[in-house]
Amino acid sequence: MKPVRKAVFPVAGLGTRFLPATKSIPKEMLTIVDKPLIQYAVEEAREAGVEQMIFVTGRGKDALEDHFDIAYELEAVMRGRGKSLEALDSTRSIPGSIVSVRQQEPLGLGHAVWCAREIVGDEPFAVLLPDDLMWGKPGCLRQMVDAYERVGGNIICAQQVAREKTSSYGIITPGRSDGALTEVKGLVEKPKPEEAPSTLGVVGRYILQPEVMRVLDRQESGAGGEIQLTDAMAALIGTQPFHGLTVDAVRYDCGDKAGFVTANIALALERADVGPSVRAFIADLG
Ligand code: UTP
Image (cartoon, protein in one colour):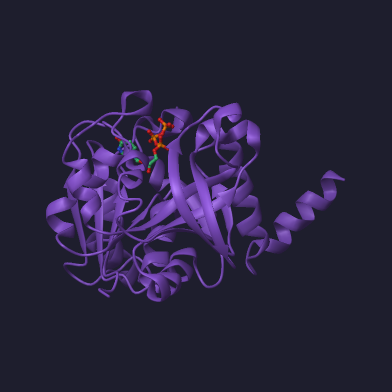
């Protein structure tokens, strides 16, 4: 079984639900406490053993690449003032470990993943949507890689969602379950609540086999006129092992304003530096 060494980060979306913040900064640069969403996702991938991060970007997304580059001027000034550079350590990356490709037009998540096909090559790969902040120990992708090493094939991150929310998710037709793993018999993108085959939704982490790129080569559009990753994955069911993993992690939907604010509060409360002040503030609210 080939290891998962590469991860695709589709970050070319327009982030229209988060305007005006996302007019000139990418959604993935919004911070949870003091770290941008993209960095949480990259750290999660590193923890899972991923060696190469592939950003699928678009116009106006240069800040994402800059974030993992060396900031010469900033570092020189800080050194000159005798300040610690420790806060920048986690943004350093091994040269060559971050590459980016452009998705010229936002034609959908499936299309964004397909844009990385030449770099992914003939290997299994992970996909992480940074606006789904997955908070767990071990990290969500680590848990998925552990499951992949047992059953192989394709593994998608699954979570129960409210029936009235099925039209916001890819929904799984479940087969047999074995602990946290559920066999995936079918997948449907954004079904109406009354048509959803279950309430087991797909959230933003995937381990996929490279054959999904051959399905995406067809460039077929689905729900909302977009090229959907869900449809391409559905075409692989029956030809390869396909499982949903219910991970032990909390998901914060940071593409949504309420989810973003919630994530900030939850992660701030866990921190030794800012936690006590935030807790005191909340206690004062009564
Ligand atoms: P979303 O639909 O949540 O992202 O796509 P969006 O389009 O940026 O947000 P809204 O709905 O307008 O607010 C899920 C993920 O897929 C990426 C997005 O960047 C996000 O990480 N994506 C989506 C692309 O990279 N390209 C696309 O064409 C569509």
